[in-house]
Length: 216
Ligand code: MD3
Ligand code: FE
Image (cartoon, rainbow, N blue to C red; front, side, top):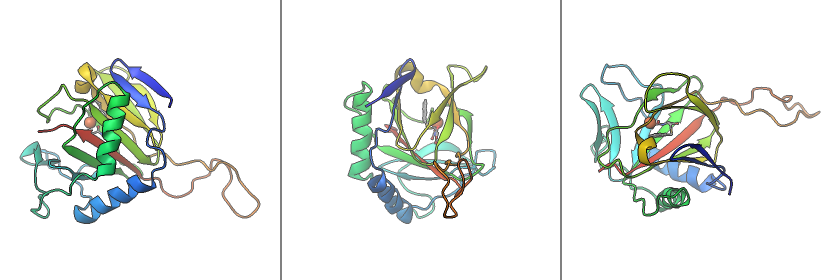
């Protein structure tokens, strides 16, 4: 398995998921129980990525601020349980990157349609910063921006492909980061039967990102 150290304590595991059908099916089960929704920032603006959660805790944002909650505010019910296939994936990825024993209790699911993005921020609502964060890209690719300790200067750009898994630990866990909109998949080859030519836009790209955390 190819892996690239992006920065100190940031490891990109290329294609770590293997085939993604079962992972995508698990996300469909989650979103059937807890719908994707556009959370509002504390300032009252809707976020461009749609979100849902699974696991004992789910990340929410509203006029009262950012926090983790045990229940979905839309339904009042607990967030859907974290499917074993997702928990195992996160644990295996963390171990492969050098953090054995990762035990995530929260998985934030972000959905990006064309134009949706996430500006530079850092994840600071979790209790235990000694635990890593594991992030999984599904569907379309996107460019990830890594600023590091300060939200300034030119970020490092890393293209995340579907099936890639990023693991962040140590000091990198507190780093500033963001992500651009989903990128259109280029058609590998034109053909004579009406398929689009190389580089043509096909379906609107949708990227799903799973972010596993130890939040509580
Ligand atoms: C580095 N999500 O949900 S994943 C987020 O593509 C978030 O959906 C982006 O940033 C996305 O908070 C980026 C990669 C990621 C996630 C959390 C991190 C990188 C991180 C926390 C600390 C450092
Ligand atoms: Fe983040």
